[in-house]
Image (cartoon, rainbow, N blue to C red; front, side, top):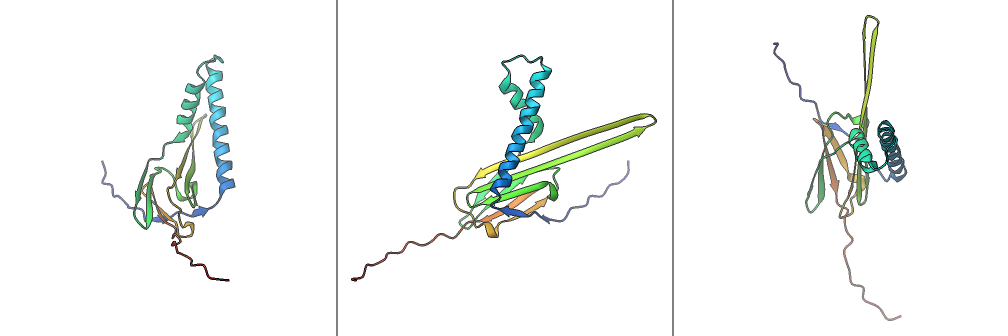
Length: 173
């Protein structure tokens, strides 16, 4: 057994997009269609016996989507969100921030090939993450930041400044 050294990766900044509702809708629709195709494959492989539709759907969902665990903390000035996304790089993640909505999506695909003599082995795998969070107050989307380190995505979402209530005295016209 040889000695190993550990290298701590530097913090990397993740681009945060604001108001990309059309892109988010397209991603949700594509994910839905992928799950539906896999659920049909499961149904087809069982001999097309009806009655297990929901089971097929949940199995397809669990095979294709990875769960994103979140921790959300709130202060008077901002929200801090920590999301676990192990195995995903900066290029594979998309973070969309709208005034009251946070969407984290990602797609990771890996391909492995091996050749030994006349035998060729090729395997592809992929995983996706998607998490949508409704926020209780408006966010200043222009100041949102995100960093990725050790498979943990850290988001700082400053709250939007609220307009102060004022009393207006009417004047005689």
